[in-house]
Length: 242
Image 1: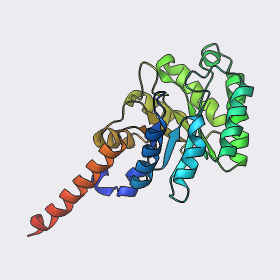
Image 2: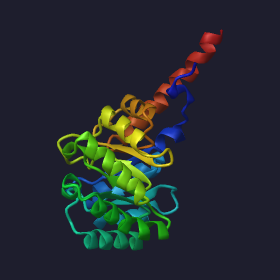
Image 3: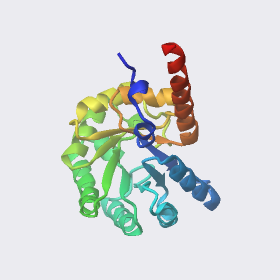
């Protein structure tokens, strides 16, 4: 029986990666270099800060790499109107993937209708523009019941993905949370792991759990390792056959 690694192509792995350019200290050169790296490695997308969207769109035009950005980031506590304005502005600037943070306090308070309606408010213009929405739960602040409720609310609101975390909370993606999230949404809803996936082995492990996207800063390390291992495996096969 072949392993997951044996079955995967380079494109399969590269297109699970959203190359993350979200740290507050990143300067213009870092953003430009990050976009060029994303294009070179042909990842799924760059996920950049809202102010960097126009530059990223220009740099990635025609490359096949999508531009994504964040909404209500990183704490989720802005009003629905502000999140909607952020989403509409990002879409006008050319972003086609939006990673939005839920109102964590509202979820913890049991205001589920508010959480669902806020997600739906962002989903509506995104889908009208042909863009997707990934809903960030920020699991570090939630118990399992709250994580399940958040997943179900995101799906009910029409979101395309549920995502573990921003990368700025005390913890990121755990295997336990990823399995719980995968069980809590329908098969057509994607699960994105963010925070903590820094190696190829780490990526393969979460893919085994049903993850279809990850947020990564170690993109080159992961994909260079994949290419090296595939090359070594291909070289070993003739020797084994002989």
